[in-house]
Amino acid sequence: MHDTPTLRTVVREQINIVARSLTLEARVVAVVLAIVSLVIGVEIANGRAGPWFDSGEWSIVGVVALVYPFAVWRRDRRFGPAFLWTLPVNRTHLVYARVFAGWVWLMAALAGFIAWKFALSLLSGLANPRILSPDAPLGVTALYLIGSAVLLALRHPLRWFLGAAGILIMLGLLERGLAAGPYAFQVFFEAPQLLAVAGRSTTAWRQLPLFAQSTIPTLLMLIVGGIALWAAALRHGENRRR
Amino acid sequence: MSHQAEWDSTGVLAVATHALSLNYGNEVALNNVDLRIPEGAIYVLAGTNGAGKSSVMKSLLNLERPHAGTAQVFGLDTVARGPEVRAQIGYIPEWHAHEYGWLSCGQLLQHVAPFYPAWDHPYAATLIKAFDLSLTRRVDSLSKGEARRLQFVLALAHRPPLLLLDEPTDGLDPLARSRTLAILAEHLADTPTTVVMSTHHIGEIESLADHLGVLRAGKLVAQLSRDALRSTVHRYVLDVSEGWSIPPLLRCVDIKRSRTGRELAATFIGQQDDVRARLTGAGATVRDVTAVTLEHAALALLTDGGSR
Image (cartoon, rainbow over all chains, first blue to last red; front, top):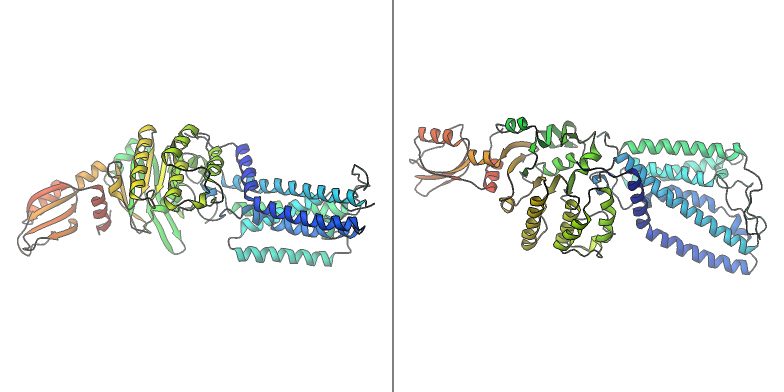
């Protein structure tokens, strides 16, 4: 009897294949960042760099995290007799391995983005540029899990779109409705307590963010995302219902 | 089925299904299918388009979840032990286009190989050479025939104990078809393998196949070993009187009468002695009885109105 592959092999191969499948997207992002860097470089040269670092790009990062699973899975048929499901791997494990592989590259991209921002902030000589909330990776992860769950749970593209749009609208309403409260969506990404110290070679936390302001809702979102993913993965399991 | 009990008693079945049923919406794809495929058999699954041949294979891989019934591969339940079952299987699907068409052939093989710990790299290289594949070409740039050859490499390189080949020679030109079947025959000679193959070109695998299953509208209407086929399906040439008609209860297809109406050739399904006795009893003279080819037998069983 032939053996099945180890989980480590499965994860490694998923990381590799996701990297290969995202080549086009990575190139597009690199080009966009290069153009933006150029524009910012001109701004820095003219001494007008400030607004770039106080803008709400973390909301965009959140949206990207939510729709990024579409890129991770776009080369595969998730439902029906697809190549992926012919592999000798537990189907649920394969789903988790693919989601994990996507997350690994998402975190790598996030780290790259932070490094890019930090480098530009150093170049700009800003005194207090906002770089990142410590909960941002968790918030990004939570949104990625929710996006993955939507993608894996829904069979038809139109429904995926409506589902994703619904979540975005809901989050938008939530943000607007709770903007003044401690649980605003914004706090996932814009905790003001974290600052990079510009003009030095190191980054420092001025203080830890308030736990109640940021971590609890982020953790709640993570839990929701995890549960949603678990429920969505059930649709693809070996014992899936017809 | 008369020969089913014989296989069951051996206890060595590569594939066994029990009342396997599968629906696509309101359409019945498989209806209480009881496959018995002995280990080492080369089993041809015959049937018209939509008869359920591909559905059987997808069920064995747990790509399609049956509504009812169970399926086992080497004694492993295809749902409960899906990954282990798939590790034993080399699969050539009915579709040619690979979802990972954006990879090169080499990259695809590199990606798939680690999933099969039994992957035989030197053998894979031999197959690539034998099938004349270029590793640098993108999968989606391959012709239908080239894509099929790549699928053969993917299916054979880990020397699986069970091959599921769904119209494997579809899309291949006659030369490539013959070459592919020769490579398959070599593979079977080197590697102990059970093969389940669906094809519309049964004549091509006449020399390889040793079992036949016939599916009609999702039902398995016949399942016989080659030997059983030889003893149950024959072509008879009869001398008959004008206006003679075939006795009832005899299962008969492909009837051809001479112009005078005094000579009749037909394929009868049933034990030769029994058929001969009935025909003689009905006033016909049996002039000749010949064994039929596998393809002819499959056609006879497909067109036969009788049930199991």
